[in-house]
Image (tube, rainbow, N blue to C red; front, side, top):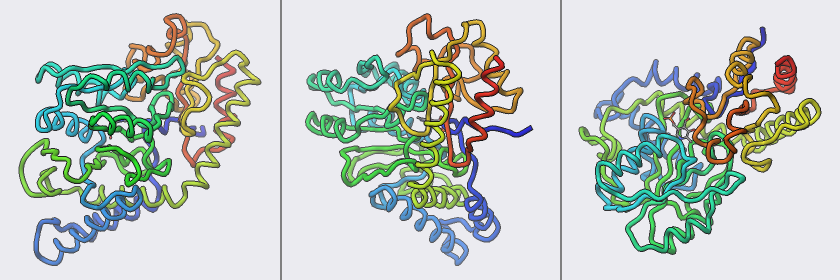
Length: 374
Ligand code: PLP
């Protein structure tokens, strides 16, 4: 049976060149980057070249890129240190953020007694930026934490506008860019953002590695303590094979961006067209102009089909997600869809279909065929 993988917002397949690079580093470059002998120096060289390559792709300087074990760690670190060390008294975020931000904010509220404000969400799932400006008119030391591309609906944040508003109000701006780094051009020199977070496994790199962009002189302090790695900001011997794999993955993603984006867009438009033919009353959660890699649809099926639909597709070799991948096994409705759908629609089956350049028209046909048998 052909496997159809349409769950790329959850994680992506490694590119062969990335596996090659990682295997080479694991085999030959096993030195510790902190050692002063030649094997150590060779490892250090790979580490710093990886950092430079990542920084260059995003318009950052190498010293602003700090490697972490994943996106979740980087989000936790930035939010926690902003409160603990930068004396932030309020976090403005939204109810549609990833739990790596939402749950961290709640813990910080309890632990430090800070204020959490949630910016309003428009009916189409977008952040209400006018409401953000209103919230920022109260003068409190504030961190705004809003994601670039929503992992469930693909809703896009206007980073330039939000950055400008934050600057006008002297608020710090953190953006979880786990879904957009490697998939759209990002120029951190031009954007007014203080902190961003990315994760390699979302752009065809390995799991267990990510990075934070920490703007120069931000004053952020470490999450945990130990050696001098990552300028003392993230102690622990560097996972060199992961980091080199991530740098390779990002490089390839940006080299092939236009070609792969146009392939994916064609597939997404083809899927929408087929859905219009086969299920004319389907609708797109979050609207039609979301990010090109994600399509979240509400299917015109009875609510009693909701529980079995993923299982049914899985039996046919098709991997998609219901809401967020991280909770696809849970019975709770998606916290993101809960913000934009009516109670009645929330009970009906919604599917998140997320694409990569490895997908084909045949994948879409197989998905449509499988949906027709439900
Ligand atoms: N932020 C967003 C928007 C995500 O989609 C994810 C992964 O699902 C994460 C954070 C967590 O990243 P990681 O798996 O690297 O911890």
